[in-house]
Length: 528
Image 1 (cartoon, rainbow, N blue to C red):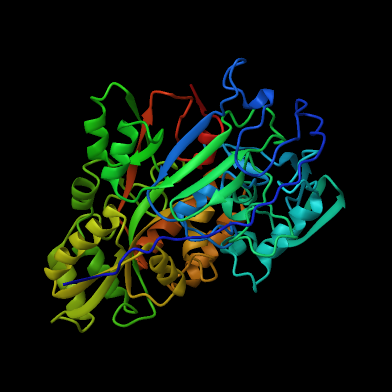
Image 2 (tube, rainbow, N blue to C red):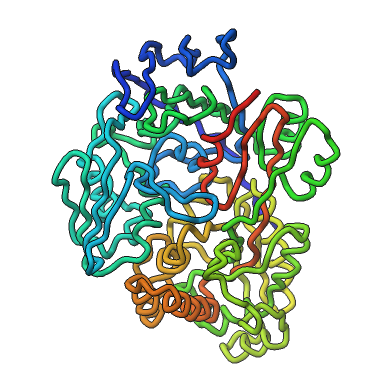
């Protein structure tokens, strides 16, 4: 029996105001600062499709889900990140090969003891409201993240930070309590975007320094336009990015075939079908995402590790790879196979070979030999989540667990995830740029995304030691041990890390998706 709640379209009207300055930064080519905020193209050289045309170069992308807010420090939803990642910048960035590269910070240095990190910022960077961004904005953004009253997702990334200093407008100094080997990767997280302090509500008004600024947002369409004063003058390569919300894949497929959109995510099945269409190309990559079954360890009977391990033995992860992802996925632990340096061999670990008899034995030892009833919650509008939940439901029946699947509309799903009060939840996470995010962020006692109430002092000590070491081989060893521990304790069952597919129209040039943030690819994409 299923309970399905109707999907509710998000309607967030953004307050949009622009104050364009008369000159760009010293590294930019000169540009005309005229124009308004109505989304129409400016008659400047950078907006011309060709020297003889004033038509703006527009890239239209389908979103498969509603955004649920736009505050980069508070909102984890992928549907939101795909938008706000184009509006905001971070100090560093991850390139497609998973290397940390400069972004707002053009360079950085570490003190010999590893406890002081000095970032030098690009000069002349401006927020979309025309105000110059300075080191004080970086300090404000990180202090906002670190303030417990904010409830920021990334707060646990920066437990090593003791203080932040701004000796001048383009210098930011992080004083650390201990060496932090993940700091450079963590300040590349979209959850650490640099924001202006004068904006009262970042959920209703996006004002960043990024390659695009907001024109309009409504329940079906989000329109962004090129930031003509972006500090990287060669980017972005299009003038307008329009997101159209199309939850149904059939609608997205029809739209890209008819030219209504230029770019969309598609399933593995649809990717195969589209390959025969000469007007489209298919781009794919191994993601850093993984599907999971999350378990609230505070709720009975899931406070007993034997019950959680029984569930792990009962779930057939290979069936999820084959049925949900049509074979286009890899078995995974908390670190995705895309992070090749740190992902571990899963052979022999609890649950990676299905064992129904072992599962029944563990339930009996825990006092639940006759099984029990429970609820699995998941998002109604992501087919992979719902399909995974239904497969798990059937597999748990074999060991006497009667699980009702409750489908949630997307905003409610995010609310439940953040509540720390779910029972069982099927979802999808991104392992992130560094194993620190994959492990400490999600599973340490004070981890910013530890919504499962999991706490293991040994695990906490391991990931803290790994954070403080700069020796690569020692980091690998510590993180391997930490992965095995969290797999054994099973606050999450890590299911599969999928390969993702994009359908791309023939008018799009240069779009090369990778496991890093999509914004990196979009700002380098052009259209014919």
